[in-house]
Image (tube, rainbow, N blue to C red; front, side, top):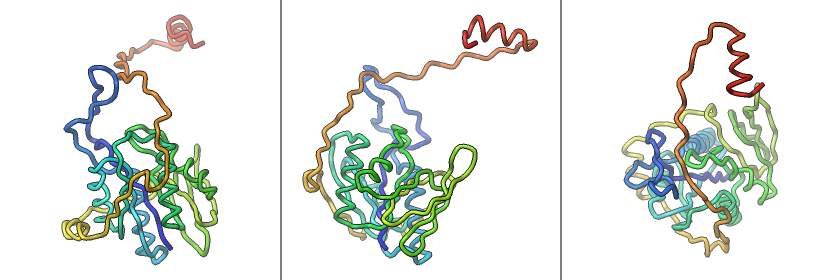
Length: 249
């Protein structure tokens, strides 16, 4: 059984992102980049499934500029067997990402496709769902537990107020949530070994996919500073302020 894992290069979660002076975008020049944390969880889950004998091969895929190779090498060091890099300098939107991943999936024919539930740069939470729709495949989002059986996968997913368990026929698209696992620490020997693992280079044109932007960004702005709170003496004061100042009742 083959697993395809998508990984994205994003600004490290410890970095405070700043908006460019002209408000056109965020400034990512000279900032630390790393693998999207939810994608790390997806790679870890694929590796665990392989260690359990459920998966025989793990293929990591990344889409974007040349520096995405670093993210793929991290995935290889974690335990992926080989990598595919669809290289482009075009800023990719979720639909374009889903189309490219479908094209790679058509080529690789994986039974399980693992993606982080969202990327921490755009927080779109759309790619996994779009990919499943394009593939006409079963999907389970926000996975907290994954169990692979004979021709199917059982996924326990997080929902409002509890959990839900789904049984999916393979192939299936699964997006991973925080509680699924804790990614392992990558050791130096594995990092060195990852440099020798195969990494295939492709271009969107090789996959016959149109990645033209369909969204225009009008303006990017910092969120307004939160105002200091106040203490009220009683419920009556609270109701008065909600009614006359906040005007929410």
